[in-house]
Length: 280
Image (cartoon, rainbow, N blue to C red; front, side, top):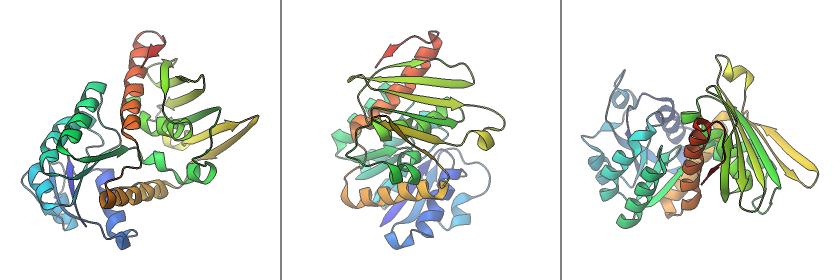
């Protein structure tokens, strides 16, 4: 299977990690990155260093490949434009981390994909954390859940949020952000009354003191875990991606892809309103 990367700049951790997994430990899956394009190259010649053919445009990548990964993990605001250029020639597209920074752009991406018959898959790699999968069964219905992590809310909040969504599913009715400029403390209230909590803290030593952790309640018992296998969740994402490229069936429903963007957006609005509830 021929894959193509479309990115803002290819010299980033995700492009390197995905390529290393697909061409190394996951090579038996039969998916190779054949070509790539980047809008704003920085640093070394990523394509030359990795033996990947450089194409002249996103359209050329889509035409040359069986599936396309729209990356730009640090430039999510570029996703809508990149998708608009990839979709006309693509059949199956993975959009890295989350669809867009606004619900309007996320909806436009989904509508464009649907109109062109493009199968779409977008999710944070933490959605497939090894430790969460070991504790959670899809048939389970926890009464509540929490997750804690680190980083800037705008770029990293999706990872911690995804651990709660993996536990409680979709159906958030409203959100409240009781944090500040360096800390997000988000309460998610579901339409059925359940609640989830997402805590994301930013600090100079955040990687040492705020590992991703999560928990969910059944009756009067909590199951909790700490995410330690980083290669594991990236590998799980790539396995899900290759399966999606083969079948066209996304492991993540479109409604979830849209709802996580709505939650991220509403969290910022709630903070700007002094911690008020914001309806989705």
